[in-house]
Image 1 (cartoon, rainbow, N blue to C red):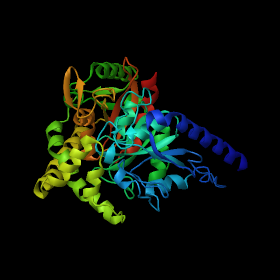
Image 2: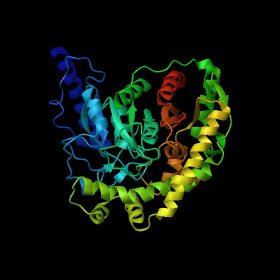
Image 3: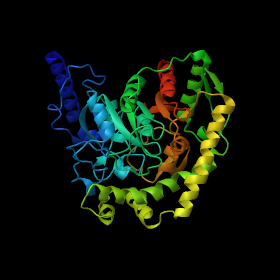
Length: 442
């Protein structure tokens, strides 16, 4: 045990040195765990995550460390207990190395945080990291932590994972405990693993859900993947389109059957439900979080201290002009179920194991100048909707979704490929990801 302890301590020290060497440029961490060496307690009983260094997004509670949500109004709040997901990972030997930066109050996809500094991409710090879990993605991609946790409302795990060239997993909504989080939407939010490979993502999923670590065996010759082009492949950056077409050829040559069929009404139903649900629920959840945790800050003070202009505007609109309850109920109880049924019918009709598409329509862009708009194919478009467009249907319907590295742009920026499975097919989806992983990087 002493030898194991010294090996773990040496690894943790190397991770701390890596953080010290890179964090001024990347702003990946808001808080580094100064007690991390004391947290190393190897067990006499074998544990599946022994010595795994864990980076935790700073809206997930870790006892003894601030939980800022990426905004200065919450920087004095220090939880006294861990979120259940963190507890389960710690119980299997994981060590929290620090709390990671994010888009302020999770409301954005760039992690250009004006309060704690813009998170720089792991491949080139001049480019956005993606968000809102940008700090965790960069921490894992740069070797500052072996694995990480993000949260995903509408792509916030998968977008930064894709833009930094790592694996990001959004489980079926409700699969993981959701206590101990600053939430935007109780309907849509979930914690998600962020890792260098599918094996570690599957291991974290097994620990969090207390399930068997083994994955189903899948024969690639029997694998059928849906390719829904009309929505997910529309208006792609040429670099993304090129990578995706090469990927589809690779998969076909490997024996995968590709079914080019579309999901009916996906754009219309997503647009009518997605943000309506978030904006209504955020208006309830943030004030409730302050109350439940006895944080001596009013919602007005939270709004006043927001430093990121895009977030200040969104939160202000959410608190002053949120959707009415009838509009919210229509989105939640009528439109969302319609979208869920379209997805169920698609998997059943075409008998596909998963659907496949580009995680984001464009690679990371330069931090400088990016705020409310970004350019794609010569046209400036709103930043958040274009980056999270392909993430919305799975986020709204609650199906499992996995992003994998698929290639790089001519500038060397990562491009991600996403696969979605039917609801509660999480372990099978991870098995498919494990099967595709070596094909994509070949």
